[in-house]
Image (cartoon, rainbow, N blue to C red; front, side):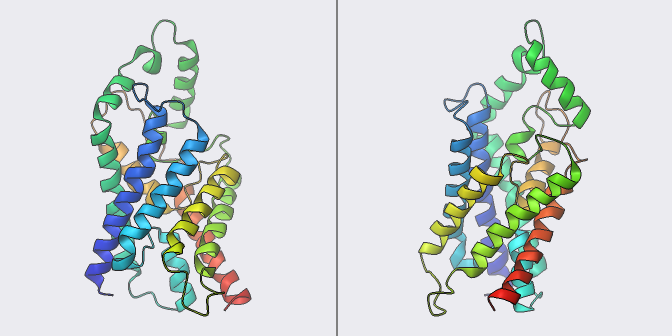
Length: 264
Protein backbone atom coordinates (compact mmCIF):
# COMPACT_ATOMS: atom_id res chain seq x y z
CA UNK A 1 0.00 0.00 0.00
CA UNK A 2 1.20 3.52 -0.78
CA UNK A 3 1.99 6.24 1.75
CA UNK A 4 -0.98 8.27 0.50
CA UNK A 5 -3.34 5.31 0.98
CA UNK A 6 -2.00 4.79 4.49
CA UNK A 7 -2.41 8.46 5.41
CA UNK A 8 -5.90 8.76 3.96
CA UNK A 9 -7.05 5.46 5.44
CA UNK A 10 -5.74 6.21 8.92
CA UNK A 11 -7.13 9.76 8.85
CA UNK A 12 -10.61 8.65 7.83
CA UNK A 13 -10.63 5.58 10.07
CA UNK A 14 -9.41 7.36 13.19
CA UNK A 15 -11.83 10.23 12.57
CA UNK A 16 -14.71 7.73 12.48
CA UNK A 17 -13.36 6.01 15.60
CA UNK A 18 -13.28 9.24 17.61
CA UNK A 19 -16.55 10.58 16.17
CA UNK A 20 -18.46 7.50 17.32
CA UNK A 21 -16.45 6.85 20.49
CA UNK A 22 -16.38 10.45 21.62
CA UNK A 23 -19.98 10.70 20.49
CA UNK A 24 -21.15 8.06 22.94
CA UNK A 25 -19.25 9.86 25.72
CA UNK A 26 -21.01 13.10 24.77
CA UNK A 27 -24.37 11.34 24.62
CA UNK A 28 -23.94 9.94 28.12
CA UNK A 29 -22.44 13.10 29.65
CA UNK A 30 -24.20 16.17 28.29
CA UNK A 31 -27.27 17.34 30.18
CA UNK A 32 -29.51 17.96 27.15
CA UNK A 33 -28.75 14.60 25.53
CA UNK A 34 -31.47 11.94 25.31
CA UNK A 35 -28.89 9.31 26.32
CA UNK A 36 -27.62 11.12 29.41
CA UNK A 37 -26.63 8.81 32.29
CA UNK A 38 -26.89 5.73 30.08
CA UNK A 39 -23.84 4.44 31.94
CA UNK A 40 -20.55 2.63 31.53
CA UNK A 41 -22.05 -0.29 29.60
CA UNK A 42 -23.20 2.09 26.86
CA UNK A 43 -19.75 3.67 26.72
CA UNK A 44 -17.95 0.32 26.52
CA UNK A 45 -20.14 -1.01 23.73
CA UNK A 46 -20.18 2.37 21.98
CA UNK A 47 -16.39 2.39 21.78
CA UNK A 48 -16.35 -1.24 20.66
CA UNK A 49 -18.75 -0.56 17.79
CA UNK A 50 -16.77 2.59 16.95
CA UNK A 51 -13.65 0.44 16.53
CA UNK A 52 -15.52 -2.08 14.39
CA UNK A 53 -16.91 0.61 12.08
CA UNK A 54 -13.55 2.34 11.72
CA UNK A 55 -11.72 -0.94 11.00
CA UNK A 56 -14.11 -1.93 8.22
CA UNK A 57 -13.98 1.53 6.61
CA UNK A 58 -10.20 2.05 6.71
CA UNK A 59 -8.98 -1.53 6.40
CA UNK A 60 -8.83 -1.67 2.59
CA UNK A 61 -6.67 1.48 2.46
CA UNK A 62 -4.30 1.29 5.41
CA UNK A 63 -4.83 -2.00 7.21
CA UNK A 64 -6.70 -0.11 9.94
CA UNK A 65 -4.05 0.37 12.60
CA UNK A 66 -5.95 3.40 14.01
CA UNK A 67 -3.64 3.34 17.03
CA UNK A 68 0.06 4.25 17.38
CA UNK A 69 0.48 1.36 19.84
CA UNK A 70 -0.63 -1.08 17.15
CA UNK A 71 1.63 0.61 14.61
CA UNK A 72 4.64 0.33 16.93
CA UNK A 73 3.87 -3.31 17.70
CA UNK A 74 3.62 -4.23 14.02
CA UNK A 75 6.83 -2.34 13.26
CA UNK A 76 8.64 -4.33 15.97
CA UNK A 77 7.07 -7.60 14.81
CA UNK A 78 7.97 -7.07 11.14
CA UNK A 79 11.18 -5.04 11.68
CA UNK A 80 9.84 -2.38 9.32
CA UNK A 81 9.60 1.23 10.53
CA UNK A 82 9.41 2.91 7.12
CA UNK A 83 5.73 3.90 7.27
CA UNK A 84 5.43 4.55 10.99
CA UNK A 85 5.54 8.39 10.67
CA UNK A 86 2.80 8.28 8.02
CA UNK A 87 0.59 6.12 10.25
CA UNK A 88 1.19 8.41 13.23
CA UNK A 89 0.36 11.55 11.24
CA UNK A 90 -2.89 10.13 9.88
CA UNK A 91 -3.95 8.83 13.28
CA UNK A 92 -3.36 12.14 15.08
CA UNK A 93 -5.03 14.22 12.37
CA UNK A 94 -7.98 11.83 12.20
CA UNK A 95 -8.42 11.92 15.97
CA UNK A 96 -8.52 15.72 15.91
CA UNK A 97 -11.04 15.74 13.07
CA UNK A 98 -13.24 13.20 14.85
CA UNK A 99 -13.20 15.20 18.10
CA UNK A 100 -14.13 18.36 16.21
CA UNK A 101 -17.06 16.56 14.59
CA UNK A 102 -18.29 15.47 18.03
CA UNK A 103 -18.37 19.15 19.00
CA UNK A 104 -20.27 20.00 15.79
CA UNK A 105 -22.82 17.22 16.30
CA UNK A 106 -23.44 18.19 19.93
CA UNK A 107 -22.91 21.93 19.60
CA UNK A 108 -26.17 22.93 21.29
CA UNK A 109 -25.74 20.35 24.05
CA UNK A 110 -22.22 21.56 24.82
CA UNK A 111 -23.47 25.14 25.15
CA UNK A 112 -26.44 24.15 27.30
CA UNK A 113 -24.29 21.95 29.54
CA UNK A 114 -21.50 24.46 30.07
CA UNK A 115 -23.82 27.39 30.78
CA UNK A 116 -26.04 25.47 33.22
CA UNK A 117 -25.67 26.69 36.80
CA UNK A 118 -25.91 23.15 38.12
CA UNK A 119 -22.86 22.24 36.04
CA UNK A 120 -20.60 25.27 36.27
CA UNK A 121 -21.61 26.41 39.75
CA UNK A 122 -24.25 28.55 41.35
CA UNK A 123 -26.90 28.39 44.08
CA UNK A 124 -27.93 24.86 44.97
CA UNK A 125 -25.04 23.19 43.14
CA UNK A 126 -22.98 22.10 46.12
CA UNK A 127 -22.09 18.65 44.75
CA UNK A 128 -21.07 20.21 41.49
CA UNK A 129 -18.96 22.77 43.38
CA UNK A 130 -17.01 19.94 44.97
CA UNK A 131 -16.36 18.51 41.55
CA UNK A 132 -15.35 21.95 40.32
CA UNK A 133 -12.78 22.26 43.10
CA UNK A 134 -11.38 18.83 42.23
CA UNK A 135 -11.26 19.81 38.56
CA UNK A 136 -9.44 23.03 39.41
CA UNK A 137 -6.84 21.05 41.35
CA UNK A 138 -6.28 18.53 38.54
CA UNK A 139 -6.79 20.85 35.57
CA UNK A 140 -9.67 18.80 34.14
CA UNK A 141 -12.70 20.70 32.86
CA UNK A 142 -16.32 19.47 33.15
CA UNK A 143 -16.48 18.07 29.60
CA UNK A 144 -12.87 16.91 29.20
CA UNK A 145 -13.99 13.30 29.64
CA UNK A 146 -15.84 13.54 26.32
CA UNK A 147 -12.55 14.24 24.59
CA UNK A 148 -9.89 12.37 26.56
CA UNK A 149 -9.34 10.10 29.54
CA UNK A 150 -8.55 10.75 33.18
CA UNK A 151 -7.96 8.64 36.28
CA UNK A 152 -10.39 8.04 39.10
CA UNK A 153 -7.45 7.82 41.52
CA UNK A 154 -4.53 9.99 40.43
CA UNK A 155 -1.45 7.84 40.94
CA UNK A 156 1.00 8.07 38.05
CA UNK A 157 2.55 4.62 38.45
CA UNK A 158 -0.75 2.79 38.83
CA UNK A 159 -2.35 4.78 36.01
CA UNK A 160 0.60 4.03 33.73
CA UNK A 161 0.53 0.32 34.57
CA UNK A 162 -3.22 0.15 33.95
CA UNK A 163 -2.77 1.62 30.47
CA UNK A 164 0.16 -0.72 29.77
CA UNK A 165 -1.78 -3.83 30.80
CA UNK A 166 -4.90 -2.89 28.83
CA UNK A 167 -2.86 -2.15 25.72
CA UNK A 168 -0.97 -5.44 25.97
CA UNK A 169 -4.29 -7.29 25.87
CA UNK A 170 -5.52 -5.27 22.89
CA UNK A 171 -2.34 -5.56 20.84
CA UNK A 172 -1.82 -9.26 21.55
CA UNK A 173 -5.37 -9.87 20.35
CA UNK A 174 -4.62 -7.93 17.17
CA UNK A 175 -1.29 -9.66 16.53
CA UNK A 176 -2.56 -13.19 17.12
CA UNK A 177 -5.62 -12.96 14.91
CA UNK A 178 -5.34 -15.48 12.10
CA UNK A 179 -2.68 -17.68 13.70
CA UNK A 180 -5.09 -20.61 13.60
CA UNK A 181 -6.30 -19.81 10.10
CA UNK A 182 -3.24 -21.10 8.18
CA UNK A 183 -1.91 -17.60 7.62
CA UNK A 184 -5.01 -16.39 5.81
CA UNK A 185 -6.21 -14.20 8.66
CA UNK A 186 -9.79 -13.95 9.84
CA UNK A 187 -11.11 -11.77 7.02
CA UNK A 188 -14.28 -9.87 7.82
CA UNK A 189 -14.37 -11.30 11.35
CA UNK A 190 -11.25 -9.36 12.32
CA UNK A 191 -13.06 -6.08 12.90
CA UNK A 192 -15.76 -7.72 14.99
CA UNK A 193 -13.26 -9.64 17.12
CA UNK A 194 -11.19 -6.50 17.76
CA UNK A 195 -14.35 -4.60 18.68
CA UNK A 196 -15.35 -7.25 21.22
CA UNK A 197 -11.84 -7.18 22.71
CA UNK A 198 -12.17 -3.41 23.17
CA UNK A 199 -15.53 -3.93 24.88
CA UNK A 200 -13.97 -6.55 27.17
CA UNK A 201 -11.09 -4.21 28.07
CA UNK A 202 -13.51 -1.39 28.77
CA UNK A 203 -15.70 -3.51 31.04
CA UNK A 204 -12.80 -5.21 32.84
CA UNK A 205 -9.92 -2.71 32.91
CA UNK A 206 -11.52 0.61 32.01
CA UNK A 207 -12.57 1.69 35.48
CA UNK A 208 -9.27 3.11 36.81
CA UNK A 209 -8.26 5.37 33.89
CA UNK A 210 -10.98 5.28 31.24
CA UNK A 211 -8.85 2.93 29.07
CA UNK A 212 -7.23 5.17 26.48
CA UNK A 213 -5.14 2.21 25.15
CA UNK A 214 -4.43 4.46 22.16
CA UNK A 215 -2.18 7.57 22.25
CA UNK A 216 -3.86 9.26 19.26
CA UNK A 217 -7.33 8.65 20.69
CA UNK A 218 -6.36 10.63 23.80
CA UNK A 219 -3.88 13.25 22.58
CA UNK A 220 -5.72 14.41 19.45
CA UNK A 221 -9.05 15.13 21.19
CA UNK A 222 -7.23 16.69 24.16
CA UNK A 223 -5.62 19.17 21.77
CA UNK A 224 -9.04 19.90 20.27
CA UNK A 225 -10.51 20.45 23.75
CA UNK A 226 -7.77 22.98 24.42
CA UNK A 227 -8.48 24.83 21.15
CA UNK A 228 -12.29 24.80 20.94
CA UNK A 229 -14.21 27.95 21.95
CA UNK A 230 -16.25 26.19 24.65
CA UNK A 231 -17.62 28.40 27.44
CA UNK A 232 -16.49 27.45 30.97
CA UNK A 233 -14.67 24.44 29.55
CA UNK A 234 -11.90 24.44 32.17
CA UNK A 235 -8.47 22.94 31.71
CA UNK A 236 -7.27 20.08 29.51
CA UNK A 237 -5.29 18.34 32.30
CA UNK A 238 -1.94 18.41 30.52
CA UNK A 239 -0.24 17.15 33.68
CA UNK A 240 -1.84 13.76 33.09
CA UNK A 241 -1.67 13.78 29.28
CA UNK A 242 1.63 11.87 29.08
CA UNK A 243 0.17 8.75 30.77
CA UNK A 244 -2.30 7.75 28.00
CA UNK A 245 0.44 8.37 25.42
CA UNK A 246 3.44 6.67 27.04
CA UNK A 247 1.50 3.79 28.64
CA UNK A 248 -0.05 2.43 25.42
CA UNK A 249 3.23 2.80 23.49
CA UNK A 250 5.02 0.75 26.16
CA UNK A 251 2.17 -1.77 26.18
CA UNK A 252 2.31 -2.13 22.41
CA UNK A 253 6.07 -2.72 22.48
CA UNK A 254 5.74 -5.32 25.25
CA UNK A 255 2.95 -7.09 23.36
CA UNK A 256 5.15 -7.27 20.26
CA UNK A 257 7.95 -8.74 22.36
CA UNK A 258 5.61 -11.36 23.81
CA UNK A 259 4.38 -12.19 20.34
CA UNK A 260 7.90 -12.59 18.93
CA UNK A 261 8.93 -14.87 21.79
CA UNK A 262 5.79 -16.97 22.18
CA UNK A 263 4.04 -17.00 18.80
CA UNK A 264 6.43 -16.10 15.97
